[in-house]
Image (cartoon, rainbow, N blue to C red; front, side, top):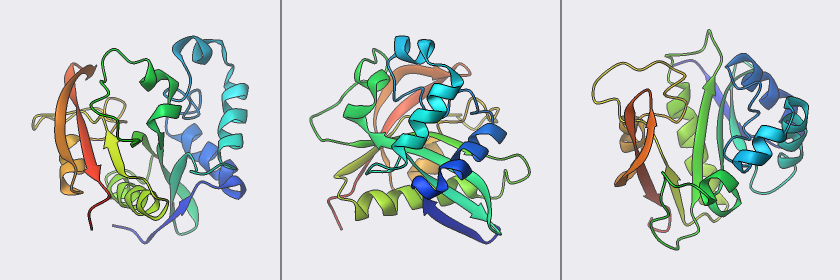
Length: 194
């Protein structure tokens, strides 16, 4: 694993967030897919999505964590409060399981040249620390369950169930959502316990 530093995606790092997303396949999304309703996302131009992400970096909680390798922005993990994630609020495939005001982890992007070096795991650890420090009661994620099979990075942008299990998340439910034909499960980490 390279020497990695993790930083919240604050307003002074908005350009770094956009650079990582642009290099890793998220240029058009700008981490807005889950934050907007389906219709609002479809109507928004890429420039409008970039503007939205830039504005979100000035808010609390920030919209993501950045990983830097030797000062170069190399990875991104997007997250937010579930009730502010319009597509999740309206989702028919990813259920709300209780009334805990969870924060949800929605995507990972790692730049080409930095993949397969543990950056996603490092980013996940950074999100856990940030969420705990900022009073989140729990984190939720909706990773793909590869069932021992290798999956393409574009299908695993939500992470893999094994990575979340290693970080202490527990399976709560299998969702009706799929990536690359593989099931996605709802996983949770309670941050209220030590």
